[in-house]
Image (cartoon, rainbow, N blue to C red; front, top):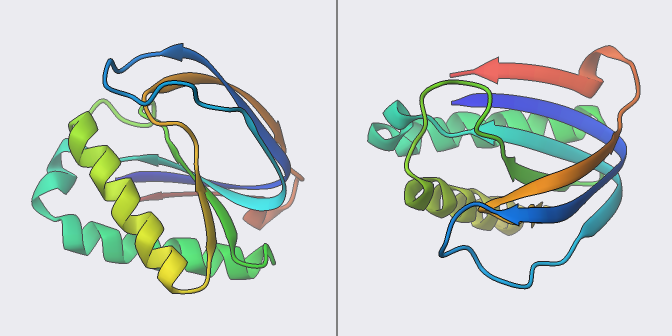
Length: 137
């Protein structure tokens, strides 16, 4: 798994091109303030160690939200550009939904960008050390 965490003073997205045929239709744009974003690439090898990878991901997401004082607000964004290895779209979407449920059960406000779309992104990220953190596991 590759994980790029960016704290955003402002983050917005607008769906542009549907890239997966069975992705839901009529998705809306979104805009958020004071939120932690998680650009996540689920890799092929993660499909064989889902529990271990999910545990590490959740630990990192909870930690960074605390460090950046986001009031437990986070956006999960599938970002298949951090590695050449890719899990299947079905596995990735299921994994994201599982992580969403587990974070929500821990009191987090969780959002996901529309899966299966290219998006126009607007990112306003401050320049301090924990505003941008990369992890590979």
